[in-house]
Image (cartoon, rainbow, N blue to C red; front, side):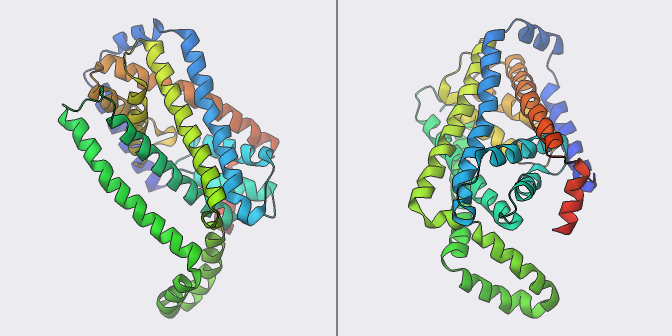
Length: 335
C-alpha cells in the first residue's frame, strides 16, 4: 500500500499522542502492574475482544441481504478478518477498502460499490449504538457527575447525535428518493463536469443499492441486534481487562470508555491506532479516578492483546485467498 502524506500525518499525530500518554508516567511501574496482573482474566479478555469480529461479519450478512441475498458466513468472515488486519498494518484505514474488495473477489455477484455502501450503514449503526451505551453509562450513580471533563463529554454527545441524524437523513434520501438525489446531481455535477459526472453516476447508483437494508424494518432490527451484541461484547472485554489489572471500575465505565476510544481512534493515526487508543484510555479511565499508571497499563495491555489475534488471522486468510498487499493498490486504481 502507498504511504503518502496522509500516512505520514497519521504517524506524526500518533507519535504525539503516544508521547503525551507516556509523558510523566513511570514505565517501570507500568511494567510492574502488567507483570502482576491476572493472566487468566487477560486470556478471557483477549478471546472476548476477538469475538467482536465474527459478530461484525454476521451483521454484514443482514446489511448485504437486499443486494446479494444471504451470503455464506465464511466469505464475510474472511473479508472482515482481512479488512481488520489491513487497518492494523497499513496506513489510511486501508481495511475499509479491503473488506469490500476481498468480498467482491470471493463473491463476484456482490458489487464493490454496494459492499462499500453497506459499510457506511455499518458505521452508522456503530455510532448510534456506542452513543446510546455512553448515554446509558451516565445514568449510573457511579458516573463522575462532579467531574467537569466528564460532564463536558456527556454534553458533547448531543452534537454527536445531531451529526448522526444528519448522516441518516442523507442516507435515507438515497434509499427512499434516489431519483431526486440523482436529479440534483445531474443538474449540478452533470453540467459542470459532464464526462466525470457520467463516470461517477454508476458508482453512486451502486452505492445507493448498498443502502437497501434501510428499507426493511426486519433487517434494521437484525442489524441493530448484532451491533448491540458486538459493542456489549467489546465493553465486557474492557471490563475483564479492568479486573485483570485490579481496576475498580463498573461495567458502565467500560461502556463510556469504549465511546471515548471510538472518538479517539477516529482521528487520523498510524496503522493499528497506536497512540490515540492509549491516550483515550488514559483520559477515559482518568474520569473515573483511575491512576495514570493503571490507565496506561490498561491501554497498552488491552491494545496489544486485542491487536495480535485478528492481525494473525487476517494475514492467514490473506495468504489462503492468494492475495498480496499490492493487490489492494491495484484494485483501488481499477475501481
